Image (cartoon, rainbow, N blue to C red):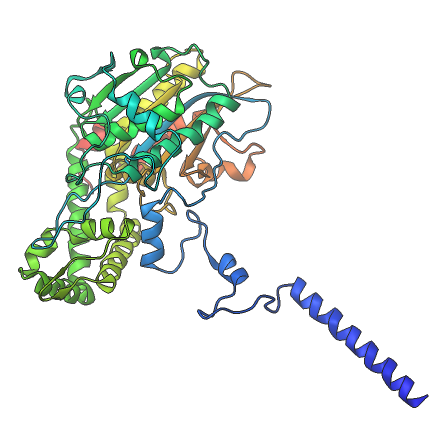
Length: 479
Protein backbone atom coordinates (compact mmCIF):
# COMPACT_ATOMS: atom_id res chain seq x y z
CA UNK A 1 0.00 0.00 0.00
CA UNK A 2 2.83 2.37 0.96
CA UNK A 3 4.67 1.52 -2.26
CA UNK A 4 1.52 2.22 -4.28
CA UNK A 5 1.05 5.64 -2.62
CA UNK A 6 4.69 6.55 -3.29
CA UNK A 7 4.28 5.51 -6.93
CA UNK A 8 1.17 7.69 -7.32
CA UNK A 9 2.95 10.66 -5.73
CA UNK A 10 5.94 10.26 -8.05
CA UNK A 11 3.62 9.94 -11.03
CA UNK A 12 1.82 13.15 -10.04
CA UNK A 13 5.13 14.99 -9.61
CA UNK A 14 6.30 13.82 -13.03
CA UNK A 15 3.07 15.03 -14.61
CA UNK A 16 3.42 18.38 -12.85
CA UNK A 17 7.02 18.81 -14.04
CA UNK A 18 6.04 17.93 -17.60
CA UNK A 19 3.23 20.48 -17.50
CA UNK A 20 5.58 23.21 -16.18
CA UNK A 21 8.20 22.40 -18.81
CA UNK A 22 5.67 22.68 -21.64
CA UNK A 23 4.31 25.91 -20.19
CA UNK A 24 7.76 27.46 -19.99
CA UNK A 25 8.53 26.41 -23.55
CA UNK A 26 5.26 27.88 -24.73
CA UNK A 27 6.07 31.17 -23.04
CA UNK A 28 9.63 31.19 -24.51
CA UNK A 29 11.15 31.35 -21.03
CA UNK A 30 13.60 28.53 -21.73
CA UNK A 31 15.21 27.38 -24.97
CA UNK A 32 13.63 24.40 -26.71
CA UNK A 33 16.12 23.75 -29.52
CA UNK A 34 19.59 22.25 -29.34
CA UNK A 35 22.38 24.81 -29.12
CA UNK A 36 24.90 24.81 -31.96
CA UNK A 37 28.64 25.45 -31.75
CA UNK A 38 28.25 29.20 -32.22
CA UNK A 39 26.10 29.43 -29.10
CA UNK A 40 22.86 30.21 -30.98
CA UNK A 41 20.04 27.79 -31.51
CA UNK A 42 18.07 27.97 -34.79
CA UNK A 43 15.05 29.58 -33.17
CA UNK A 44 16.99 32.29 -31.35
CA UNK A 45 19.02 32.98 -34.49
CA UNK A 46 15.82 33.62 -36.39
CA UNK A 47 14.39 35.84 -33.67
CA UNK A 48 17.48 38.04 -33.21
CA UNK A 49 17.99 38.58 -36.95
CA UNK A 50 16.72 42.09 -37.52
CA UNK A 51 14.28 43.29 -40.11
CA UNK A 52 16.50 44.40 -43.06
CA UNK A 53 14.89 47.84 -43.06
CA UNK A 54 13.42 48.80 -39.73
CA UNK A 55 15.53 46.98 -37.14
CA UNK A 56 19.21 47.77 -37.75
CA UNK A 57 21.39 45.50 -35.63
CA UNK A 58 24.51 46.38 -33.72
CA UNK A 59 27.13 47.00 -36.38
CA UNK A 60 27.93 43.73 -38.16
CA UNK A 61 29.96 44.55 -41.28
CA UNK A 62 29.71 41.09 -42.81
CA UNK A 63 25.93 40.92 -42.42
CA UNK A 64 25.59 44.44 -43.83
CA UNK A 65 27.85 43.62 -46.77
CA UNK A 66 25.74 40.58 -47.66
CA UNK A 67 22.63 42.73 -47.68
CA UNK A 68 24.42 45.21 -49.90
CA UNK A 69 25.41 42.51 -52.39
CA UNK A 70 21.73 41.51 -52.74
CA UNK A 71 22.45 38.04 -54.10
CA UNK A 72 19.35 37.03 -56.14
CA UNK A 73 18.96 33.70 -54.36
CA UNK A 74 18.05 35.46 -51.10
CA UNK A 75 14.29 35.38 -50.56
CA UNK A 76 12.75 38.79 -49.94
CA UNK A 77 9.36 39.96 -48.82
CA UNK A 78 7.32 42.29 -51.01
CA UNK A 79 4.47 44.57 -49.96
CA UNK A 80 3.98 46.41 -53.24
CA UNK A 81 0.45 46.52 -54.62
CA UNK A 82 -1.36 46.01 -51.29
CA UNK A 83 -4.41 48.18 -50.54
CA UNK A 84 -8.06 47.84 -49.47
CA UNK A 85 -10.05 46.03 -52.17
CA UNK A 86 -12.03 49.12 -53.16
CA UNK A 87 -8.89 51.11 -54.03
CA UNK A 88 -7.65 51.35 -57.62
CA UNK A 89 -3.98 51.60 -58.54
CA UNK A 90 -3.62 54.45 -61.05
CA UNK A 91 0.14 55.02 -61.38
CA UNK A 92 3.50 53.71 -60.23
CA UNK A 93 6.81 55.59 -60.07
CA UNK A 94 9.92 53.43 -59.70
CA UNK A 95 13.42 54.67 -58.84
CA UNK A 96 16.11 52.00 -59.04
CA UNK A 97 19.80 51.72 -58.44
CA UNK A 98 21.68 49.79 -61.11
CA UNK A 99 22.46 46.18 -60.38
CA UNK A 100 25.73 44.55 -59.33
CA UNK A 101 28.68 46.03 -61.20
CA UNK A 102 32.40 45.61 -61.60
CA UNK A 103 34.42 48.06 -59.44
CA UNK A 104 34.93 51.66 -60.49
CA UNK A 105 38.35 51.66 -58.79
CA UNK A 106 41.25 49.21 -58.76
CA UNK A 107 43.59 48.49 -55.87
CA UNK A 108 47.01 49.51 -57.26
CA UNK A 109 49.56 46.77 -57.95
CA UNK A 110 47.10 43.94 -57.44
CA UNK A 111 45.40 41.58 -59.85
CA UNK A 112 41.91 42.63 -60.89
CA UNK A 113 39.10 40.29 -59.77
CA UNK A 114 38.30 37.90 -62.61
CA UNK A 115 34.57 38.37 -63.20
CA UNK A 116 32.99 37.26 -66.48
CA UNK A 117 30.50 39.84 -67.79
CA UNK A 118 29.09 37.74 -70.62
CA UNK A 119 25.54 36.50 -70.03
CA UNK A 120 25.28 32.71 -69.80
CA UNK A 121 21.96 31.22 -68.69
CA UNK A 122 23.64 28.05 -67.36
CA UNK A 123 25.84 30.04 -64.96
CA UNK A 124 24.54 31.11 -61.56
CA UNK A 125 22.89 33.36 -60.70
CA UNK A 126 20.49 33.01 -63.60
CA UNK A 127 16.88 33.76 -64.50
CA UNK A 128 14.35 31.97 -66.76
CA UNK A 129 14.19 35.03 -69.04
CA UNK A 130 17.93 35.68 -69.25
CA UNK A 131 18.48 33.93 -72.60
CA UNK A 132 15.43 35.57 -74.18
CA UNK A 133 16.58 38.95 -72.83
CA UNK A 134 19.94 38.59 -74.60
CA UNK A 135 18.25 37.63 -77.88
CA UNK A 136 15.87 40.56 -77.68
CA UNK A 137 18.58 43.06 -76.83
CA UNK A 138 20.70 41.76 -79.75
CA UNK A 139 18.04 42.61 -82.33
CA UNK A 140 18.37 45.66 -84.54
CA UNK A 141 15.53 47.72 -83.19
CA UNK A 142 13.57 50.88 -83.69
CA UNK A 143 13.99 51.94 -80.07
CA UNK A 144 13.97 55.66 -79.52
CA UNK A 145 16.72 56.73 -77.18
CA UNK A 146 18.30 60.11 -76.68
CA UNK A 147 21.41 60.36 -78.84
CA UNK A 148 24.00 59.60 -76.19
CA UNK A 149 22.12 56.48 -75.04
CA UNK A 150 21.81 54.88 -78.49
CA UNK A 151 25.58 54.38 -78.63
CA UNK A 152 25.68 52.36 -75.40
CA UNK A 153 25.57 48.54 -75.37
CA UNK A 154 22.20 47.11 -74.32
CA UNK A 155 23.68 44.27 -72.29
CA UNK A 156 27.12 43.44 -70.82
CA UNK A 157 29.28 41.25 -73.03
CA UNK A 158 32.95 41.22 -71.96
CA UNK A 159 34.61 37.98 -70.84
CA UNK A 160 36.59 40.07 -68.35
CA UNK A 161 34.41 42.85 -66.99
CA UNK A 162 35.39 46.42 -67.71
CA UNK A 163 35.43 49.03 -64.97
CA UNK A 164 31.90 49.84 -63.81
CA UNK A 165 30.29 47.28 -66.13
CA UNK A 166 27.05 45.56 -65.13
CA UNK A 167 27.59 41.88 -64.31
CA UNK A 168 25.31 38.91 -64.95
CA UNK A 169 24.29 39.18 -61.29
CA UNK A 170 23.23 42.78 -61.94
CA UNK A 171 21.10 41.80 -64.94
CA UNK A 172 19.45 38.95 -63.02
CA UNK A 173 18.69 41.25 -60.07
CA UNK A 174 16.62 43.52 -62.31
CA UNK A 175 15.01 40.71 -64.27
CA UNK A 176 13.84 39.56 -60.85
CA UNK A 177 12.63 43.07 -59.94
CA UNK A 178 10.71 43.38 -63.20
CA UNK A 179 9.08 39.97 -62.84
CA UNK A 180 8.05 40.75 -59.27
CA UNK A 181 6.47 44.07 -60.26
CA UNK A 182 4.76 42.52 -63.28
CA UNK A 183 2.99 39.97 -61.10
CA UNK A 184 1.69 42.75 -58.87
CA UNK A 185 1.09 45.71 -61.14
CA UNK A 186 0.28 44.11 -64.50
CA UNK A 187 -1.35 40.79 -63.68
CA UNK A 188 -3.06 41.75 -60.44
CA UNK A 189 -3.88 45.45 -60.84
CA UNK A 190 -3.95 45.75 -64.66
CA UNK A 191 -1.92 48.97 -64.57
CA UNK A 192 -1.00 48.51 -68.25
CA UNK A 193 -3.32 46.77 -70.67
CA UNK A 194 -2.16 44.41 -73.41
CA UNK A 195 -2.52 47.25 -75.94
CA UNK A 196 -0.36 49.71 -74.00
CA UNK A 197 1.36 52.47 -75.94
CA UNK A 198 4.44 54.63 -75.55
CA UNK A 199 2.40 57.37 -73.89
CA UNK A 200 1.76 55.12 -70.89
CA UNK A 201 5.47 54.99 -70.03
CA UNK A 202 8.04 57.53 -68.92
CA UNK A 203 11.59 56.18 -68.87
CA UNK A 204 14.77 58.03 -67.92
CA UNK A 205 18.33 56.92 -67.22
CA UNK A 206 21.75 58.39 -66.70
CA UNK A 207 24.29 57.99 -69.47
CA UNK A 208 26.05 54.93 -68.05
CA UNK A 209 25.74 51.51 -69.62
CA UNK A 210 25.01 49.94 -66.22
CA UNK A 211 21.95 52.15 -65.64
CA UNK A 212 20.64 51.74 -69.20
CA UNK A 213 21.08 47.96 -69.06
CA UNK A 214 19.50 47.72 -65.60
CA UNK A 215 16.48 49.66 -66.82
CA UNK A 216 16.15 47.48 -69.92
CA UNK A 217 16.37 44.28 -67.84
CA UNK A 218 13.61 45.46 -65.51
CA UNK A 219 11.42 46.62 -68.40
CA UNK A 220 11.90 43.37 -70.31
CA UNK A 221 10.52 41.22 -67.52
CA UNK A 222 7.91 43.82 -66.48
CA UNK A 223 6.10 44.82 -69.68
CA UNK A 224 3.25 42.66 -71.02
CA UNK A 225 4.96 42.76 -74.42
CA UNK A 226 8.40 44.29 -74.85
CA UNK A 227 8.01 46.19 -78.13
CA UNK A 228 11.00 48.32 -79.14
CA UNK A 229 8.75 50.65 -81.14
CA UNK A 230 7.01 51.70 -77.93
CA UNK A 231 10.19 52.27 -75.93
CA UNK A 232 11.35 55.86 -75.65
CA UNK A 233 14.16 56.35 -73.14
CA UNK A 234 15.34 59.79 -72.13
CA UNK A 235 18.87 60.63 -71.08
CA UNK A 236 19.48 62.40 -67.76
CA UNK A 237 22.94 63.96 -67.51
CA UNK A 238 22.73 64.58 -63.74
CA UNK A 239 22.95 61.75 -61.20
CA UNK A 240 20.47 63.65 -58.98
CA UNK A 241 18.04 64.06 -61.90
CA UNK A 242 17.79 67.81 -61.46
CA UNK A 243 17.14 68.36 -65.20
CA UNK A 244 16.78 72.09 -65.83
CA UNK A 245 16.79 73.06 -62.15
CA UNK A 246 20.38 72.28 -61.21
CA UNK A 247 21.57 75.76 -60.29
CA UNK A 248 21.59 75.62 -56.50
CA UNK A 249 24.61 77.15 -54.70
CA UNK A 250 23.41 76.18 -51.22
CA UNK A 251 23.09 72.54 -52.26
CA UNK A 252 26.77 72.60 -53.20
CA UNK A 253 27.60 74.38 -49.93
CA UNK A 254 25.98 71.66 -47.80
CA UNK A 255 27.64 68.94 -49.86
CA UNK A 256 31.06 70.50 -49.23
CA UNK A 257 30.30 70.72 -45.50
CA UNK A 258 29.22 67.08 -45.52
CA UNK A 259 32.48 66.08 -47.20
CA UNK A 260 34.42 67.92 -44.49
CA UNK A 261 32.47 66.02 -41.86
CA UNK A 262 33.36 62.73 -43.55
CA UNK A 263 37.05 63.66 -43.60
CA UNK A 264 36.99 64.68 -39.93
CA UNK A 265 35.44 61.38 -38.88
CA UNK A 266 37.96 59.41 -40.90
CA UNK A 267 41.06 61.08 -39.46
CA UNK A 268 39.75 60.47 -35.92
CA UNK A 269 39.58 56.71 -36.54
CA UNK A 270 43.02 55.40 -35.57
CA UNK A 271 42.01 51.78 -36.20
CA UNK A 272 41.00 52.68 -39.76
CA UNK A 273 44.29 54.52 -40.31
CA UNK A 274 46.34 51.55 -39.08
CA UNK A 275 44.38 49.33 -41.46
CA UNK A 276 45.17 51.56 -44.42
CA UNK A 277 48.84 51.67 -43.42
CA UNK A 278 48.96 47.87 -43.24
CA UNK A 279 47.22 47.45 -46.62
CA UNK A 280 49.51 50.04 -48.22
CA UNK A 281 52.57 48.07 -47.07
CA UNK A 282 51.11 44.90 -48.59
CA UNK A 283 50.63 46.47 -52.02
CA UNK A 284 53.78 48.61 -51.79
CA UNK A 285 52.36 52.11 -52.23
CA UNK A 286 51.96 55.21 -50.03
CA UNK A 287 48.98 55.11 -47.67
CA UNK A 288 47.52 58.25 -49.20
CA UNK A 289 47.55 56.67 -52.67
CA UNK A 290 45.79 53.54 -51.41
CA UNK A 291 43.10 55.57 -49.68
CA UNK A 292 42.52 57.60 -52.85
CA UNK A 293 42.07 54.33 -54.77
CA UNK A 294 38.96 53.64 -52.66
CA UNK A 295 39.86 49.99 -51.94
CA UNK A 296 36.45 49.15 -50.43
CA UNK A 297 34.87 49.35 -53.89
CA UNK A 298 37.11 46.61 -55.23
CA UNK A 299 36.94 44.62 -51.99
CA UNK A 300 33.13 44.58 -52.16
CA UNK A 301 33.37 43.01 -55.60
CA UNK A 302 35.64 40.28 -54.22
CA UNK A 303 33.22 39.76 -51.33
CA UNK A 304 30.00 39.73 -53.35
CA UNK A 305 31.41 37.33 -55.95
CA UNK A 306 33.20 35.11 -53.42
CA UNK A 307 36.61 35.84 -54.96
CA UNK A 308 39.69 35.79 -52.72
CA UNK A 309 41.09 39.17 -51.73
CA UNK A 310 44.32 40.09 -53.59
CA UNK A 311 47.78 39.04 -52.44
CA UNK A 312 51.30 40.29 -53.17
CA UNK A 313 54.77 39.12 -52.17
CA UNK A 314 54.33 41.21 -49.00
CA UNK A 315 51.17 39.40 -47.87
CA UNK A 316 47.44 39.38 -48.46
CA UNK A 317 44.60 41.81 -47.98
CA UNK A 318 42.11 39.88 -45.86
CA UNK A 319 38.63 39.87 -44.37
CA UNK A 320 39.78 41.76 -41.26
CA UNK A 321 40.89 44.71 -43.40
CA UNK A 322 37.51 44.58 -45.13
CA UNK A 323 35.60 44.52 -41.84
CA UNK A 324 37.41 47.59 -40.48
CA UNK A 325 36.71 49.70 -43.58
CA UNK A 326 33.12 48.50 -43.87
CA UNK A 327 32.51 49.21 -40.18
CA UNK A 328 33.76 52.75 -40.66
CA UNK A 329 31.34 53.17 -43.57
CA UNK A 330 28.45 52.14 -41.33
CA UNK A 331 29.58 54.48 -38.55
CA UNK A 332 29.83 57.29 -41.09
CA UNK A 333 26.25 56.67 -42.24
CA UNK A 334 24.98 56.92 -38.67
CA UNK A 335 26.84 60.15 -37.95
CA UNK A 336 25.68 61.54 -41.28
CA UNK A 337 22.09 61.25 -40.12
CA UNK A 338 22.86 62.87 -36.76
CA UNK A 339 24.72 65.90 -38.13
CA UNK A 340 21.97 66.89 -40.63
CA UNK A 341 24.36 68.34 -43.22
CA UNK A 342 23.53 65.56 -45.65
CA UNK A 343 19.81 65.96 -44.94
CA UNK A 344 19.98 69.66 -45.89
CA UNK A 345 21.94 68.76 -49.00
CA UNK A 346 19.40 66.05 -49.87
CA UNK A 347 16.39 68.38 -49.59
CA UNK A 348 17.84 70.73 -52.19
CA UNK A 349 19.45 68.04 -54.34
CA UNK A 350 16.39 65.93 -54.84
CA UNK A 351 13.60 68.52 -54.93
CA UNK A 352 13.51 68.73 -58.76
CA UNK A 353 12.98 64.97 -59.04
CA UNK A 354 10.28 64.86 -56.35
CA UNK A 355 8.63 67.90 -57.92
CA UNK A 356 8.40 66.08 -61.26
CA UNK A 357 6.86 63.12 -59.47
CA UNK A 358 4.26 65.26 -57.68
CA UNK A 359 3.32 67.12 -60.87
CA UNK A 360 2.83 63.85 -62.73
CA UNK A 361 0.71 62.41 -59.91
CA UNK A 362 -1.47 65.51 -59.88
CA UNK A 363 -2.10 65.24 -63.62
CA UNK A 364 -3.05 61.59 -63.28
CA UNK A 365 -5.33 62.36 -60.31
CA UNK A 366 -7.09 64.89 -62.54
CA UNK A 367 -7.82 62.16 -65.10
CA UNK A 368 -4.84 62.15 -67.45
CA UNK A 369 -4.10 58.60 -68.63
CA UNK A 370 -0.47 59.09 -69.60
CA UNK A 371 2.82 58.12 -67.97
CA UNK A 372 1.13 55.54 -65.75
CA UNK A 373 4.42 53.72 -65.20
CA UNK A 374 7.55 55.78 -64.60
CA UNK A 375 11.04 54.35 -64.31
CA UNK A 376 14.18 56.23 -63.31
CA UNK A 377 17.32 54.09 -63.62
CA UNK A 378 19.92 55.68 -61.40
CA UNK A 379 22.69 55.31 -58.82
CA UNK A 380 23.23 55.08 -55.06
CA UNK A 381 23.93 58.83 -55.07
CA UNK A 382 20.38 59.28 -56.43
CA UNK A 383 18.46 57.02 -54.08
CA UNK A 384 20.35 57.97 -50.95
CA UNK A 385 19.36 61.68 -50.95
CA UNK A 386 15.76 60.79 -51.84
CA UNK A 387 15.53 58.55 -48.77
CA UNK A 388 17.15 61.21 -46.61
CA UNK A 389 14.92 64.03 -47.89
CA UNK A 390 11.79 61.96 -47.27
CA UNK A 391 12.97 61.36 -43.70
CA UNK A 392 13.29 57.58 -44.03
CA UNK A 393 16.25 57.49 -41.66
CA UNK A 394 16.03 53.80 -40.82
CA UNK A 395 16.61 52.71 -44.40
CA UNK A 396 19.98 51.23 -45.23
CA UNK A 397 22.32 52.67 -47.83
CA UNK A 398 21.00 51.59 -51.26
CA UNK A 399 22.12 48.08 -52.11
CA UNK A 400 22.69 46.86 -55.65
CA UNK A 401 19.37 46.86 -57.57
CA UNK A 402 17.59 48.73 -54.77
CA UNK A 403 14.11 49.96 -55.66
CA UNK A 404 12.09 52.85 -54.24
CA UNK A 405 8.47 52.92 -55.39
CA UNK A 406 5.74 55.55 -55.19
CA UNK A 407 2.24 54.13 -55.73
CA UNK A 408 -0.74 56.39 -56.46
CA UNK A 409 -4.16 55.00 -55.50
CA UNK A 410 -7.73 56.21 -56.08
CA UNK A 411 -10.39 55.65 -53.44
CA UNK A 412 -13.17 53.70 -55.15
CA UNK A 413 -15.76 54.99 -52.67
CA UNK A 414 -14.62 58.62 -53.08
CA UNK A 415 -13.06 58.83 -56.57
CA UNK A 416 -11.80 62.37 -56.09
CA UNK A 417 -9.57 61.28 -53.21
CA UNK A 418 -6.10 59.94 -53.98
CA UNK A 419 -3.49 58.40 -51.73
CA UNK A 420 0.13 57.34 -52.01
CA UNK A 421 2.22 54.50 -50.65
CA UNK A 422 6.02 54.54 -50.61
CA UNK A 423 7.95 51.27 -50.56
CA UNK A 424 11.66 50.59 -50.29
CA UNK A 425 12.90 47.17 -51.37
CA UNK A 426 9.43 45.76 -50.78
CA UNK A 427 8.87 47.32 -47.36
CA UNK A 428 6.14 49.88 -46.77
CA UNK A 429 7.84 53.02 -45.43
CA UNK A 430 4.96 55.45 -46.04
CA UNK A 431 4.51 56.32 -42.39
CA UNK A 432 8.24 56.76 -41.81
CA UNK A 433 8.20 59.82 -44.07
CA UNK A 434 8.38 63.33 -42.62
CA UNK A 435 5.08 64.35 -44.16
CA UNK A 436 2.99 61.37 -43.05
CA UNK A 437 4.24 60.25 -39.63
CA UNK A 438 1.55 62.09 -37.69
CA UNK A 439 -1.17 61.11 -40.17
CA UNK A 440 -0.53 57.47 -39.29
CA UNK A 441 -1.92 58.06 -35.80
CA UNK A 442 -5.28 59.20 -37.12
CA UNK A 443 -5.66 57.22 -40.35
CA UNK A 444 -7.83 54.17 -40.86
CA UNK A 445 -6.23 53.55 -44.27
CA UNK A 446 -2.76 52.08 -44.88
CA UNK A 447 -1.62 55.00 -47.04
CA UNK A 448 -1.13 58.76 -47.09
CA UNK A 449 -3.32 61.45 -48.72
CA UNK A 450 -1.74 62.76 -51.92
CA UNK A 451 -2.17 66.35 -50.78
CA UNK A 452 0.24 65.78 -47.88
CA UNK A 453 2.94 64.70 -50.30
CA UNK A 454 2.15 67.63 -52.59
CA UNK A 455 2.38 70.14 -49.72
CA UNK A 456 5.66 68.66 -48.52
CA UNK A 457 7.29 68.93 -51.95
CA UNK A 458 5.86 72.34 -52.85
CA UNK A 459 6.38 74.04 -49.47
CA UNK A 460 7.39 71.80 -46.58
CA UNK A 461 10.85 70.89 -47.89
CA UNK A 462 11.94 74.53 -47.65
CA UNK A 463 10.82 75.30 -44.09
CA UNK A 464 14.18 74.28 -42.58
CA UNK A 465 15.81 76.96 -44.77
CA UNK A 466 13.30 79.60 -43.67
CA UNK A 467 12.13 79.73 -47.29
CA UNK A 468 8.95 79.02 -49.23
CA UNK A 469 10.34 77.99 -52.60
CA UNK A 470 13.23 76.16 -54.23
CA UNK A 471 14.98 79.20 -55.72
CA UNK A 472 15.02 81.10 -52.45
CA UNK A 473 16.26 78.04 -50.49
CA UNK A 474 19.03 77.53 -53.04
CA UNK A 475 20.30 81.09 -52.88
CA UNK A 476 19.70 82.17 -49.26
CA UNK A 477 22.76 81.86 -47.06
CA UNK A 478 22.24 80.01 -43.73
CA UNK A 479 22.07 81.88 -40.47
